[in-house]
Amino acid sequence: MTFFLKRVLIFTSIASIGYCIVFLLWTNLVPFQAFKKNLNYKMGSYGSMFTRIQEADTTRDVDILVLGSSHAYRGFDPRIFEEYGIKLFNLGPSNQTPKQANILVKKYLDQMSPELVIYEVYPGIFQGDGLESSLDLIANGPLNSDLISMTISLNHVKAYNAMIKRLYMTKTGQYDAFN
Image 1 (spheres, helix red, strand yellow):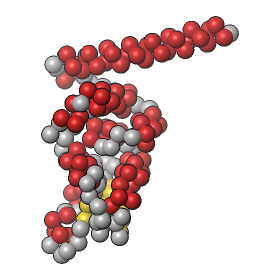
Image 2 (cartoon, helix red, strand yellow):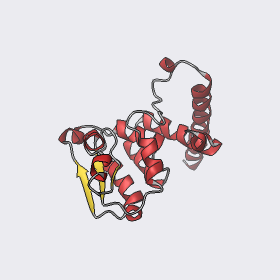
Image 3 (tube, rainbow, N blue to C red):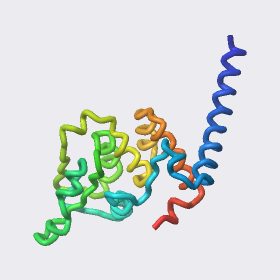
Image 4 (cartoon, one colour):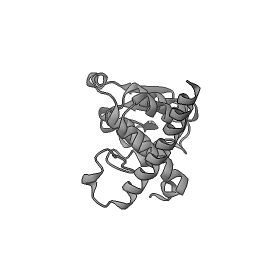
């Protein structure tokens, strides 16, 4: 029995490493997106999460922190609040579920120390799996153990592929070089 378990463990390890290598070769060498249906890795895409995360890393002492779905990032314009002397920071991507909000709160709440947190909740969010927001956060958000745990708990091939791509881009310096 232990011989069998050892073989399974060895096979699983080699297959996982092999998958990552083939996946990264495929994503970097095949030019057609049609052949990459299980890779939705979009840095700096719509919603401007990449830019907002970069700003969040240096932002301190806000009056209001906004989280939630696209209703949050489209509905709370910091420029309007600034006209009234209120410093608002918006961390709401499309389809943000409580899982993604929790990652952002853990990372930025103490640093920003807001007087008020607005968490916009769209009821339809609770029906979805949170894949869209997770992919946006994997591609553009803070890379930490909470993000990796969220990816594993989501248990979706697109999330795993996006995380493999993110780890590769971070390790090779491509993530930091993105503007």
